[in-house]
Image (cartoon, rainbow, N blue to C red; front, top):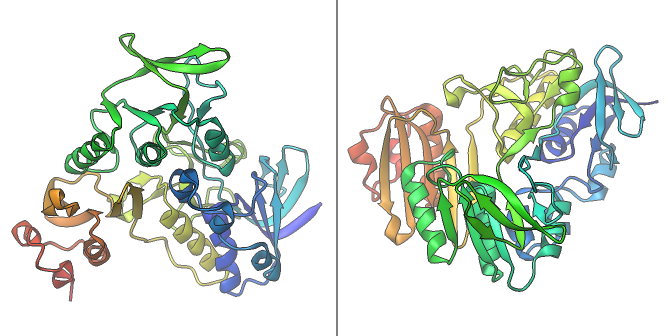
Length: 413
């Protein structure tokens, strides 16, 4: 039986950063990384953008080349899915029955793309966008004049819509909520992006529910909405979030939050309730300082990387609790949306700049304090706004409106 002083399960951003941070911090023990996919760790954000568009080859998405892992003596155990954890014996078992021992276990599995639960949801031309294989299969299905129905108006759905319009596909986005990006942004941002997508020829439908998929010749041929309307489709893309991959941990006795947000519960050093077992990234439910202490999961590269660093610090004797300002980004057409902070629970917004000029920011406040910014083609606001969110700074909204006054003028002394 192979044994690693630190075993990492999950070879995405979090898993890769955990190995990097451990070696940078002087960790001398053996490190093994088990990944379900055959590939070395790679960047996932380009999957729905540059990679889908054919503008970025996969090799340029690798987080580090093979030589990097070899030089740092990180054993890459690819193509293996862990199905069981024995917390008492300090072992994991993969789907092929191979057992691997660990001293410390870092669980960095993220989540699987949530699939449609309705009739037809498993037809072969119904695609998620979560892995390289997902996108390769999607690209193989796309014809010169494909009609594509996208279920979900979040980041993934809208990014895919922008790319597919550029490729000449006929695109319909179906969102069950009354506006796109409803879970992550304010109405002003939603309205702006809805108008942009429609201007680029996307048919955008909000407040609609998918009932089932129509099948023809073993493939999805349309999406049936509540009320009976059928949206014809040659390809269906589903972008409705992820299901955290934590079943083996929970079966081993780890604690998960009750109901939402799902995942596995961790403390402010990313420890689960199992001895010597940590969880990081998309699957880790944690009390977040920038969500007012509420327990949430953050699905972002930032969160995965910062949690990985938190665990590496603890394992190398330099503990520092997780306290990182959340940030996200999304590229659609020639628009770069950059978000810092969490807008949940805000009670006021300030529009800074002019949406018609395609460069503006929406600032979110709660009890007078700045809690988040959504910046569209406004990099300066994004960069300077981070300190305002981190400090929970109170600024007169009338002053914030003035785009000629840089946000750094309001930084805490």
